[in-house]
Length: 297
Image (cartoon, rainbow, N blue to C red):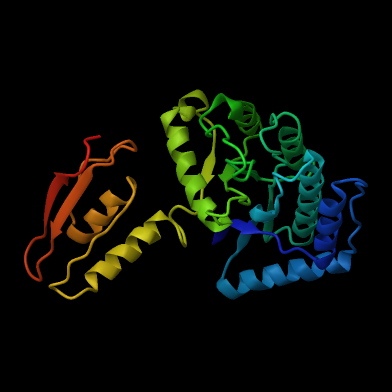
């Protein structure tokens, strides 16, 4: 059986009309739309058809993350949108119970306490709609603020409820308000930050039964694919070519290993003076010469 644990709902046109009215009116008035079954079934059938085309047996579907509007004021906007999306997902699952499962989008408004909207919606989705998990956006400010890392106690109320309900959380950032960071780039950045924060804070010692799913950092466009692309391009250069590679602390080591088969000592986030000279002959073993440059860090 092939299970796709990371998929998003296909919205009917009526949902986007509701979104426009919701944002334009800033949730005032705040009546949820009544979408006919025919419109919902058409979208659900298209989704299942796409699953059949690629051989997927079961798909876990959640709201499309970059449309969650976590930073749109007031918080009632994302609350209503999350309710609408989750209710729509429940209708999809009801129509195709053998093929689909629901994953809740949470109304995480900016840096508002999670007990205000997000946790009540999670309980509703699991207890009343039968959902099997939830999305967690590490930056509900969508680039407008400085949110606490996922290892911070700010998130503990959510982790306690997830553990109580026995549902996993899929880490997935949403939109980005930064001109220098597209929402797709933000996916990679936030998921990488989340991993470091969770492990650094020893979150799983506090919540040993907490279940977290991380996507993106090793998928299409993620760090692993980024490293693989660099390695392939360097290996495709002429034998006498000279290349300069500038990377981050989490990519330099994997690139070196990919090119030479050798590992180097991990580089800390605060170390900026590391330099490695690689010699990769056409035949024979490659060499790695660790060096330093500039002011010592």
